[in-house]
Image (cartoon, rainbow, N blue to C red):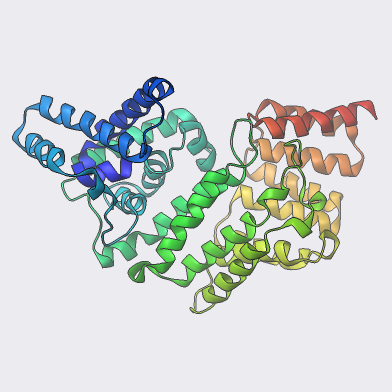
Length: 395
């Protein structure tokens, strides 16, 4: 809804549009329980939000806003569903938010907030930052967007220039869906499949088409193929080694392989290629025991050589444990902790607890899990940690 209305009224009115969309949703919540859902609920919501924006523009009283209001009022709601150069309004919005005047990290944060509907807490987790810093970043980005006169769908060449930022946005969107920051669900399938849908549109759009787009789509598909088996029938977290591989989505795995082959058509190996290969090794292994951990570590080594990431290093250390044992992995984790302060990072503490438990140090493992529990708002993760702590304390 925000994307459709932004195309109609202009991105400089983004904050009014967001407020109008919220008003429309509240109006639906109040009215529909008594009147019933309208035949075309989507059109009703957009029309209601559109009228709210028009009211705001008319109250402004300036000639340019009045003109926009009159044009929008005369437009039929069906026009909101017409396709343009980029068929999806959400994709239009993403490219518009990735304007060169907005700093790169702020582009990602603004797009996640505006198009993905992410909370400030979720964005902060994606950036390994705090919510106060992200809130300030969003305020500055919206001000930049409001001040720009040429915010719109970019030209074909500019679209190519903004592609990398767009792919990063979709990458973060999928990651948040794959492991939700908070709430009752471990997985937010809506975010995962929305990211897949949008990156597939980019992959089909001639000016934006590139092997790295296919690599990212392959990564998403390999990961999404396992979504249904990441939790059991009671909604509890299942580790990779405990998942039923016969239940992995074979259609997605097949399409992931197709996209991975297409990604090999260029002469560049990107981070998305390496991450897709890691996901492919997991997804295509016959069973957990036959996983090629050596190749996975090689891919992580290459990723870390390009640009060091604490999160990637934690994943690499988990792979090291599978190949070389917990003592070697703990040594690598200690080196990481000296390089980067991760004392308040839940993933680090969970990894530490896991490695200590494998080493046989139950007391310290339980302490690490308890620290991770304090930093984990996601309920399935919290229940998983509580079970591990109880087992360690009772042993």
